[in-house]
Length: 350
Image 1 (cartoon, one colour):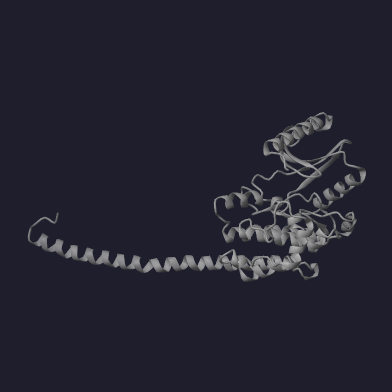
Image 2 (tube, rainbow, N blue to C red; image 1 turned 90 degrees about the vertical axis):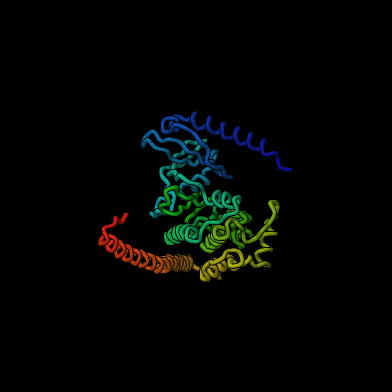
């Protein structure tokens, strides 16, 4: 039986306090940073927001405790890999610090919710993102993953919680937490039996504990896009205690509900490519280039359709305006004739 929410909260708060004390006991950490606000916790690290004394603004830190040398080297590889990705759709990563008991790297802070939080908020209100907005977010995420793959970097845990939505809207979305990203040519180093990523967003091969490649990211992206377009619904509805084997069986035996059955007006090509990302056979999943092109074309068609609809409204209103103007001119003409006649009779017109 799970502990009560209050007990979980108290335990998490105690853990956060202990980590804070450990970090600020370090001279380098204490000299560089001021403030502590926990943004998230994972199995390997805790992400906190603090203020950098050097640059005078808020940044995020991903903090690790007691990493063995092999894992620390993996983190170092991840940081180098992400630093090489120059794209506005990525949360940028900066310096790595190894202080023995603790290690951390710096990241930029993105003001705004993550996609999972946004979907949960809209779902609670019985709402869904407009298609135009959904396509913008989907395109930004897909472009980021495509860019990473072209530079040999896998994400390996693509999900709505790792998609941040900047409050400025520029860009529409940014992908965070390449925390288990690895250079593509060393992806085979995953220990046998280890599940890569979050189970509900993990590919069939990942759930089987097999090595993963770019097709694994395509699967996670597809589930993320499905959730984005449907307002938070997942392709496979399972209970919180569902086993990995149960998920694998569902992937093999059940087709997710078609997007058009859930989302009115979804683009046919987008539906086709999203549904294809979730097939069990990784060789049958679409390329990221095809996903991006499908989203770009769908977005262009939707914008054009909205433009035509707006033009139609203007055209339909114009005859009324012309008619009213004509009536106004006719009335003015009658009043002028009447005024002249009264003036000739020597009577006032008002």
